[in-house]
Length: 359
Image (tube, rainbow, N blue to C red; front, side):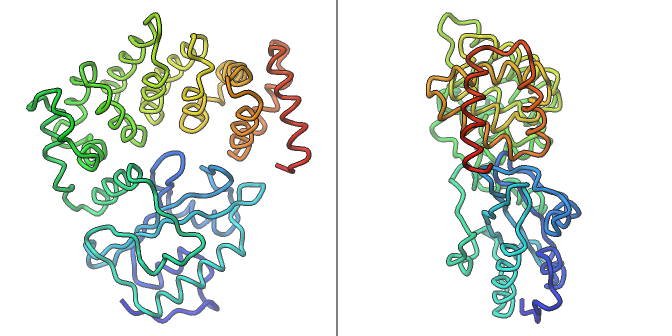
């Protein structure tokens, strides 16, 4: 599609797409894969609000665009945009990206039905390619949003989780099919089927499924099934921290936040509390639960005792500091008289390091 645009009239990515005659959706690709409301993204572009889900001081986004009259001719750009110390998108970065997009528009924007990365973005310093897992999840969500049918791998995955195939025949179930099932929990009784089979799923398909479910708003029934599996693992003499972390991440967008927070409290007082997979799972996927004063205290206490020491403590806290509102919560935790000696020492070293780095 050929368009005639000018940087003198286009001041945001939102305007760029609208002036190009394209519909578009913005996805956060960092902590969770989920859409960002158009009005929120415009406010982010205009520096009226901070990016809500920063990761490593960057905004990881997927831009899905399509002509108003044909959703099959869609295209995708994956962008990793640096943020300033307040979590806002730089005007310099935005304008540089706009110049590149306007140049592309002058050459013509062409979509396809494969959701392939736009090749003309290959030389863009802000472009990146997600991992295969993240790509599969994005594709599944994008096709559902566009009203397109799922991939050819969907039916086999659906039949497996519906119990129509041998439970041990998971090696024939593709990643894209599992992502499609997770993205369509409201179709074909997928949510009900998953809740029924969670307890007996072998570890490998369970791991892949959880990686997909962490991006979905799970209902009570499915959330309870995953929580039961986590509780069962926690009760073992030697619980597998990786399995528990998977359950925790899978519940990170659950419609039952109270259930997740109860599980968090249990995990953070268990023998796996200081495991790196648990700690990173909480900070990367369940950070909103750290608004709870007790959970934040237990999390910081466990983080201070992690096996990798001060380096991991600093990295996790520095990342959390970029999240809107989290800096205030952590500073409040500093004044908790019940903090452990290990936490006090770790916090002291952390703040000594950021005074030099300027985080």
